[in-house]
Length: 358
Image 1 (cartoon, helix red, strand yellow):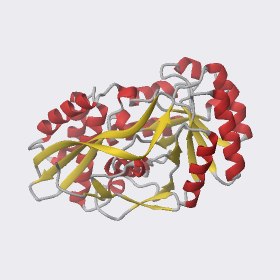
Image 2 (cartoon, rainbow, N blue to C red):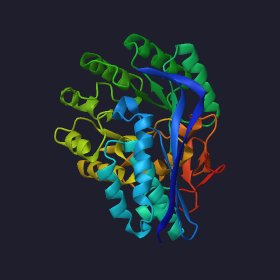
Image 3 (cartoon, rainbow, N blue to C red):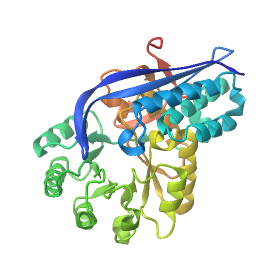
Image 4 (cartoon, rainbow, N blue to C red):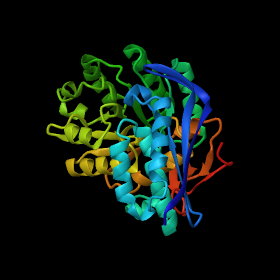
């Protein structure tokens, strides 16, 4: 059951709709892909989307780490899944997206050999969950128009990027809530764009406009300041950039917990293995899990969905990253119906490459 061939490649993919967040504008994305094949012809796939602004992992560093990683996995026995994922965690700690791509490819291959969906091997808790779809920072009129488009496509959960201008953010949200009514869920992501005083003021907006929660309003390192927020507001804060590892999860969960929600992204933490460790911390601490993403291939979005459906603490999904791509290297993985992501019955991650690797 050895891995007889391991390879990786890189592609630059355009987005269908360029967008702006608090600290940059994005129109294309550098994605990396991994393919592991065993002697019986079974194949495991993975994908990486390095998050330089969050983890410091550049595309060049991701490629270097993948070259190292595939060399480590050549001739490895897939039955030693735990040993191999621990090896990647140790050797590729500085490149979490590369680690994530290799980790999910190993999990995909392992579950394909078993002939079952990955989430069944991990321990299925959920069959399907609603995902939000993201609206970037843009004028209120454009925000309303984009929201209308998503509602017509069946989405019931909207995520709005904030963080450039506090007063403009308030206006956009008021107008959005007026347009969509109270039946549509709205959550927001400030991407570290608010001060402590602004975050405290934003608590009233969360309550008055029935906003589900706010992601990372304060800077990444401002964990002590997060703990000074009122209890009811802190419970509605999702840690994103402040949560990169299981060790960060332990620190954030220490009483009084700095937040009420963990936003797990495979590209930040290094893949399915550490993501599930964060999930255990959340469950033990009584915190909710949100599963987020970068602009990513359907491969890694599916990996996050399978992991999310295996965690009892999972409450929120924001797995819309593959929907932003003008093209992808793979297909399958899940079914999107009325804004909900459903895992298929296909083995592993349920994904297939659209064309031979290049």
